[in-house]
Amino acid sequence: MLVKNSPPKKGIFITGTDTGVGKTYVARLLARALSSGRHVAVFKPYLTGSRSDARALLRAARSGQTLDDVNLYFFKKPLAPLLAARLEKKRISVGRTLAAFK
Image 1 (cartoon, rainbow, N blue to C red):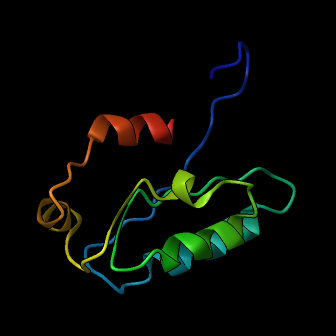
Image 2 (cartoon, helix red, strand yellow; image 1 turned 90 degrees about the vertical axis):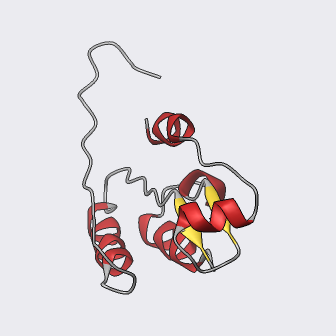
């Protein structure tokens, strides 16, 4: 929902090219530091193998979000999300992802 004359929302995106390079670690540190006195939302839409990263981000942000707000798609096999989705005969919707981000 957009509120007339509200300031634009700002985002920080953490990206990396491999598993285990520290993306979630850095995001947790930022979320915890920025959440003091501000509303900070976290978003890790695609996870495979475990939802522990999403749970850690929730604790760090202290935002009141739910696990499903933070993590839209979870697949049991620890593989690339698109491959894991195919194995589970599920589809990832970019539209749903963008809508949830907004």
